[in-house]
Image (cartoon, rainbow, N blue to C red; front, side):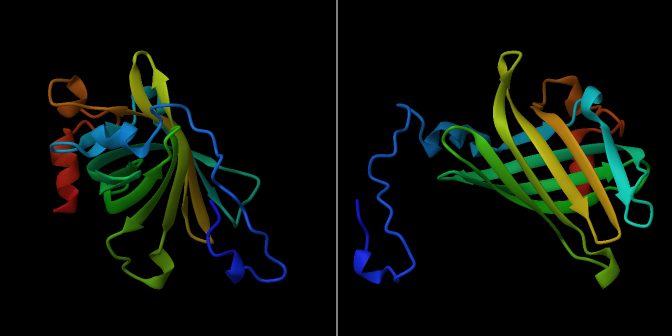
Length: 189
């Protein structure tokens, strides 16, 4: 398939994507269950709560912190998903964000986490996450890595984000924060 070859500039190459091979059944619709019904809920299990905080004023040192993050993927369309996020780092107050993400047919994931608002220019924090869908212990997980922060401080974290449903203990008692998912997400109301 060649689209508008006459629009290529001298230093650009025309690329034919017509014979890219995909495995049968690997389409964006494969992940549509992420946003079906009331959506899906994801959290950090106890083993993956440790994260690292680093400050540019002391680049040779870091501080261990705890990071409980909950995603509510509310909708999904053609490889893209959207929802609400609450994150709590150690004893700091929970922070509400919105997420927009993409998942490729073969399970690669990219997410941008966007704060509702910043209280000042000094507190603007950008968060991105990359990872993949991983089948672990008979269930799909998001195996994610994220980085967040400003030019003066950064937090980095990786985790197997596990799905939580109302019939599981995580629904009433999230690791690291001892609150239920609905209560934790109420920080965004």
